[in-house]
Each structure stands twice: as structure tokens, then as C-alpha cells.
Image (cartoon, rainbow, N blue to C red; front, side, top):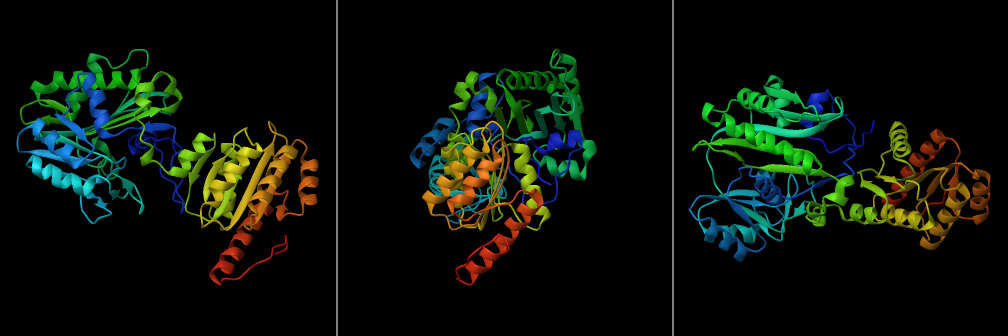
Length: 444
């Protein structure tokens, strides 16, 4: 029922035949793939001699005006630098519409930058909270004769790189896949051979580049693959990849993601991380070594191990409840980690019950019980805690919790623990709505 997503665009899902699972609560990706702003992506591509429109970033309205003067001309585009799709159709929290706008003068660049910088842009991907725009990217406006889509990704099915391309550029690849799947070209790449001249030229011809641009397009495809490999990318998505009216091949927009596991050798790229675009609680959790993702439900989950965490969320769903988070303690279920985990869970006002599901192996159950008791006692927690502990020293853990006198409800059976979590959650929710106090027992 729940899938821990791996930051692949739908293009990869099209390739492998994966489909989205229809659940009420969608589990967004853990930060396993760094995403960088468009202006950073363009700069990186340019360093590989890949064609991009002339442009620069501005962090203030005055700077936007200067950038527009440097670009010259009277036909430019200003783009809000927010890590989300659908910027052009988004709305800022001040009512200003459109995160991508055409401008015709430096003065207009300054005026529009004032409407964007410092305000939150709300798109179909950001949710109601939106994401703050700290800068704008101003580029020359180039007119395309033809627009294409091209992405370099890692494909799980073939366990290697794949190039996904389409002649329908400038559109959401999801829409293309749904309405015209035959327009998508998929090319598996042998990691030992790379993208040969023949492979790149064949892709360029299939896409429909004009004869005079085939070689330029071939070179661009090979250079994009080089960026993908040398920079430990998980995704290079160019939409659109354009042939301009003066027969140049340009990457008009770029979305680049990089593997967190390669941070040690890609320090420059990872220095570009913009934490203001990420959920503050998720950033805080990562700093403490916790894998934490907010969801939309009301039952907090504290689990060790990603597989057990997803199974816990599944069984909550099967019993009619809705998880409030994914939280994997990993092997570090120390009192400090448990305290931080409870801080994150209880910071969500929607949480009406907490399901602790721990398998004691690397960390013994009695050590976990000590941490759990210490946290619940110090926080004076009133939210009901349902705990299922299994593994090493579980009997001692049960004794410690039972002797603590705290309202930590021990349930050995996973199904029964999930049932109780859902029941407690419903009771608390009703009590809150009626502004009543409530006392719990395992029989409710």
C-alpha cells in the first residue's frame, strides 16, 4: 500500500511499467536525491559546453534590474527559483500569479522581482503552504522551432542508465505517457560503453531535429550523459530541449538530482543545497540521523527499520487509520533519538495517538524501554502511546514499562496493536472535538 519513492520522474515509471498506488496518504520521497535550483543546473550544464539561454540569478529587485541590463535586449523571461513543478501556473501568497513571466525591460524585471522574492509560491506540487522564493533567474527569451523532452535516469529494471526522450517537449511527460505513449523513446545504455555516436545520433533523428542540428543534438545528448555519470546524478531532465529559430540546440529548462551517497565526492554540488525549500522538520530529523517524512494522517509512527515502518503504516491503513508520518529510527534507537523522534511526532497537532513498533536487535528492548519511559515522563505526554516491542530482552522491557506507572500500552500482537492505535486515535479525536478530557485503558 505504501511505496518509499525513489525520486524518479514518471518517465522512469513508464519505462518499467510501474503505476502509482491509489492511497489516500501518499508517501513523499525521503531526501535521497539532492535537487538544485534551475540557475545552478544551467550553470553546471554550461560548464560542460552544453547550450543554455544566456542568463543570471538575482536575489533582490535591484539585482534583477542589473541582471536584465547585462543580458540586454527587450525580450526576457523571469523565473521564480522554487524547487517545485508547475511554477508558471502557481500563485504567490501575495496574490501575484505566475512564477514564470515574460518581461520586456530591466524596470519590469525589478517590478516583477518585488512581487516574487520573499514570497511563497504555491503550486500543485508545494501544497497549500507553498515554498519561499529567495531568488529569480532572468534569461534571454529564445524562440523554439521545435521542442523535445529528454531525460537521463537510472532504471531499476535493467539496473543501468536509460535515456527517455519524446518529440512532445514542453509538456508534462505524465500527460504524454497517458495520452500518447508511442511518442516516448526509451534507450537502455550499457554503462561500460556509454552513449556512442550512433546511439546519440539515432535518438536525435527519432526526436525530429532538423538535419543541420543532428550533430549538435548528438553532442548535447552525449554531454548530458557525461554530466549524469561524472556528477553522480540520479536524474537529468531537460524539458524542453529545443531547436531554436536560428538552429541552435538549447536546454531551455533543466531539473537535476544527485545521489546523497555521493556527497563526499560532489561537495561543490551539495554546497548548493537550499534547505529553505525542504520541510523544516525533515531537515531537523536528518541532522539527528532519523528518516522522517510527514504524512497527512493522525497516528504517529515510531519504528526501527524502513521495511517494518512501511508494514506498520500498511496495517494502520488496513484497520481504517491514517499514519501521520514515516519515521525510521534505524539501528540508533537511543534515548536521545527516541526523544527527538517524539518531539517531531508531537509537533504535529493532528497526532491523536502514537504507535511505537520496535524490534530489539542491535539495540536491546530493555534499552528502548528505558528511553521510552524517560521520554514519556519528561514530556508529560498526554497522547496515548501504544507500544509493541519484540526481540532481545523483551520480557525485561515489559517489566520496566509496567512498573513505570506510565500510560504506555503494551500490545504484543501487531494486528491488535494497530487496532488499538486506531481506536485510541478516534477516541482522542472525538474528545478534542467535544473539548473533553479522556482516560484510557487497553479495553478503552
